[in-house]
Length: 325
Ligand code: COA
Image (cartoon, rainbow, N blue to C red; front, side):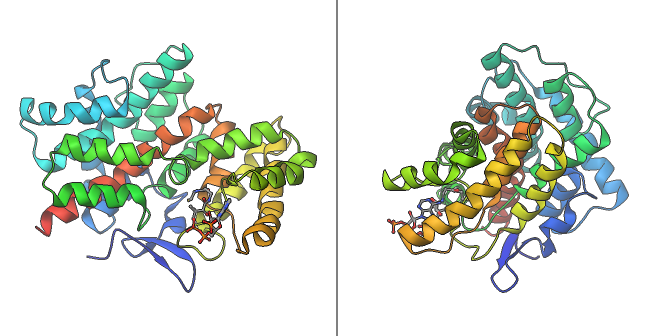
């Protein structure tokens, strides 16, 4: 089986099980790519129906006491015992319930009434329905699904290293997920989307970008959304998300976001070359932070949304590591 994810240093492209991740967007559902990650190949029609139906069934294990992904993680061992779930279904429970938990957390924190899940809706449409209270249009669904798919896995990242160590140490499923989540919220890596959006809000206008970034670097701060450990050119996911941001903000009150994020890419690169002597390109978080904002989600939701995506990769890695034992 091909690796869950790889980056080809020659073409600078990200692959999920050997398939270019950016090519999966637009024509795939979350469930389709999840199947690819966990089984190593794209599902047949019947397999897609089967995983999608199972995920809807597992939603019935939701409990309103799950007010954070940590709470869900801590409850997984109990759920596994109570419902006599095998490893696959225990992991799939985390993936299936993550959007419901994030919606619940969002509702509590922002005082919003969340809609009840609808059985006829898939994983992503159901989340948009619950949080927005209206059925997503086809474009809304495609865009949101694309953002989530692009974050499903990434080789060599801090939360993955933590997950791998926890599996190798024989930790329980609850402990594996909670230690992984702990690392996942760190600002330099997985919490960078939140930080990038906070930065855009402070910058406010394109005219402020250069001065703001220079002050930030002088005071030892980071320019969020630029630079990557592995990519040595523009992150291919940033290209897809920039195009999406341009389309979504055209002639709307959010047009400032494209101007500001493009300017951060331009001046950030110049300043990082001057101050740090590096060639830093936009990473996935630069445009994705802005894309989530166009859905009306506050910056604080960026990291939980990232966890909804990444839970797919975590599931695939745990299964692969368990097989290789
Ligand atoms: N802002 C400020 N400084 C940056 C930077 C950025 N965006 N990107 C790199 N640097 C700095 C590094 O901190 C390092 O400084 P040091 O020598 O004083 O320690 C130097 O430039 C060399 O960095 P490099 O080797 O190119 O990258 P790295 O592997 O050390 O760091 C990241 C990679 C992702 C942690 C880094 O680029 C970063 O902090 N980016 C901003 C956060 C972000 O967007 N994270 C999301 C990643 S998907």
